[in-house]
Amino acid sequence: MNEPPVLKVTGLKKSFPKRKKLFQPKAWHWAVDGVSFEVARGQTLALVGESGSGKTTVGLMLLGLLAPTGGEIEFEGKPLSHFTRAERFALRRRMQVVFQDPYASLNARMNIREAILEGMIVHGIGEGREEREDRARELLRQVSLPPEYLDRYPHEFSGGQRQRIAIARALSVEPTCIVLDEPTSALDVSVQSQVLNLLKQLQQDRGLTYLFITHNLEVVGYFADEVAVMEQGKIIEHGSVDAIFDTPQMPYTQKLLGAIPKVEVAF
Amino acid sequence: MSEPLLKVENLKTYFSMSHGVVRAVDGVSFEISRGKTLAIVGESGSGKSMTALSVLQLVPEPAGYIESGRIVYEGKDLLDLTWEQMRDLRGKEISMIFQEPMTSLNPVFTIGTQMIEAMTLHGTSRKEAKTRALELLRRVELKDPVQAMRQYPHELSGGMRQRVMIAMALSNEPKLLIADEPTTALDVTVQKQILELLVKLQQETGMAMLLITHDLGIVAQVAQDVVVMYAGKVVESATVQDLYTRPQHPYTKALFASLPSRQRRGQPLTTLEDAFAPISGDEPSQ
Image (cartoon, rainbow over all chains, first blue to last red; front, side, top):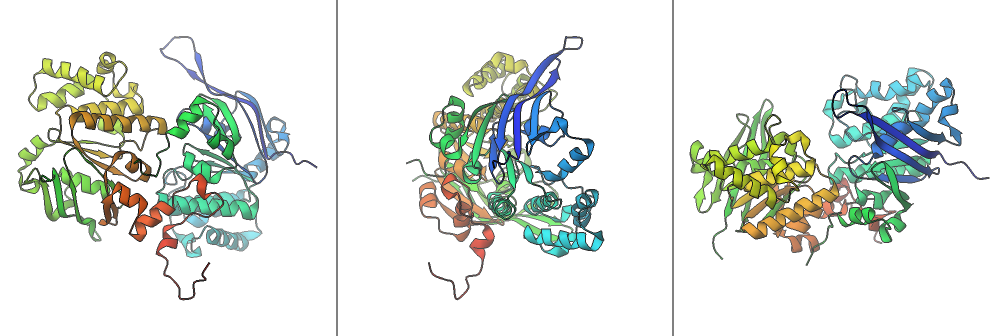
């Protein structure tokens, strides 16, 4: 039996109005212009591109935070457009997100306990407060933070610690798929390595499916299984990491790969 | 060898905070020769930017202050100069460009106005300044310099704005350019263009460069010498070639080992905790 892909996107489109001058007829900017891909369970697809390529817009549409202008998104074989209200609600539990800026993604007025418990309460995970708190402590342990941190507030933590809290929060509702939108771009390299190790470990332990949105090709080469290169709202090249890195077909992909600052001496 | 263009000796820049003194820069020394590039590499909070700001005496006052040390530029200690002498030196002898060009440009003036102001402040006539501004924008390879002069900063892309900043920094032909994370906010392909431009301009003008960065990849492309900073101190100082082939300090080694790459697929990356973990007596040998 072939399992349907966790995520299947067909001809996804999103346009935004652009108006140069007042009273000028509306024109449309196609931020995402017919994007299709699939991600199988336990796999990582990297969506790579430069600013303005539309990669984040794709992520936001998958999460239901932006309504697509056209196209279809299927989650575990079922199109989102056929989802009932209850299913749509449940989907928010199955699909989580970790954003780039851990300084912006945690509510400064909630302590870590509240932040992690919130999702569990909304989705009715765990029986009562005791059990949820136990789960929260266990989640902190899994992201290598001491359980005492539950009583602290986001401002007491460094960027790397916040990102781990954001990951614990995403995991609290037991998702199948996580959209990682530049999860390490705001972090120092030594902290980035901790977060990447953690994400890899969690993927192995829990069979998580990742959509990894990034502009960093070094991270992609290390982390992803497949790569889709985006330019101006379209996927221009899609393949395994080996295929994309060894035999890039499109000039834009070649240019991107050629622009990676190499950590080797040019003598 | 002649004397270095800039020689920083045992620089200490401290901040007095409510909970005590923070030693942001704690005894840093380095030299830059004429026409060469020195990179200061470090992570957030290592003190690399404060070192650069200290050279120009732009440390945020009153909390920050230069506690001690010498900053010898062309044989004279900059710390002995008056405020006015230092102001004349900034932008003329030593220029600086920053990470986010949008915050360094004034949003309500056109590029032309801002470039001309910078030059007239250092005693050039307006007419001359205008001709020179156009020429500079051409040198930083902006596609349409005449139009760029009339544009406001928000009308330009990030890469174009950084080119404008470089043009402004070069307007008085400085002998030293301090570049603090000049390409961090840019896409990789634009980053590559800007780095190539800086190297080209350096070859044309013979200026020296102090490059502040967290990216070891950029260092290899641009610099000849490297200083690695950690917690306000220099942990390693070497030529680029030595640092990349034979890093000495555990921190430097850990920095290299923590970089993700395709070659490291399937194995966990080194973290600083691994690198600094105490070595136990009965480590299994492999």
